[in-house]
Image (tube, rainbow, N blue to C red; front, top):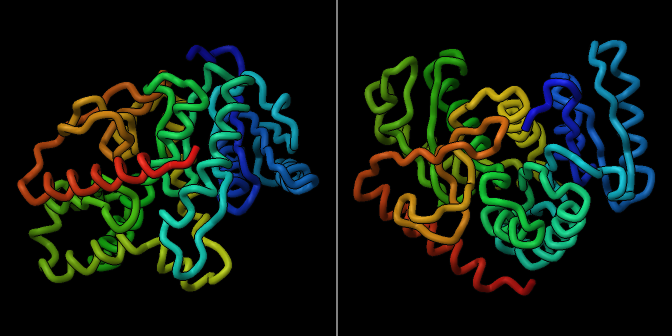
Length: 313
């Protein structure tokens, strides 16, 4: 996208915990100037000012702006949508669908009008469905929009593996496909510690337990917090994606992307490994799946298709 001679402009829509954590990490890593926008007056302005005042201590030179006006987001290079209701105990991601779909539609239309050439990362739940809504109403090309889910699920899986084995997180590599949450498709055969498959290091029973805990990772935190959902790990996951784009790292990351025949799936967003670089989704990687994994992927796909079909936007 050719940002050699100027800073990237990163807009974060929603200044709640996830949005603020994302803005903080993007600034601390000097990824670009950040615009924090929210419908609540004063909140994005206050959080942006607070973060700017941490710059002399943290040593970053990026500028943060808080606003309620989408005009301030004009010509953003990357837009992260975190706006929407968070889950509460007992709620599924699908329970949020219709409320958040209207919020995401409104945001996507405004973003599309002010930043038609942006790259968009959608975080709002249920993320696979919300990313479809955002693409439709922002009118973005499929390589310019992606959901955030697999990076978070893989990070949770990696943490549980590292804790079980007592090894560094850096040496654990994990891959998950499919929907975010209950229909996540874990790939233990593509998950390793310094190249050694976890199936050779951990019993099948313990792997199954870790997979279940990863699937329920968000709900476990919601249960503890009671009035909100996870935000530190989601913020880190979003920032890793932003960094891969800004610095053209071409990281292979599991993300919901728009599929047109890959994995035998058409017309929906699903979590699969893709290459993220300065031109967005540069490649979708198709892994060889076993019969059980294919069945789980197909189940996930049917879930997304049903969710999209039931949308009221």
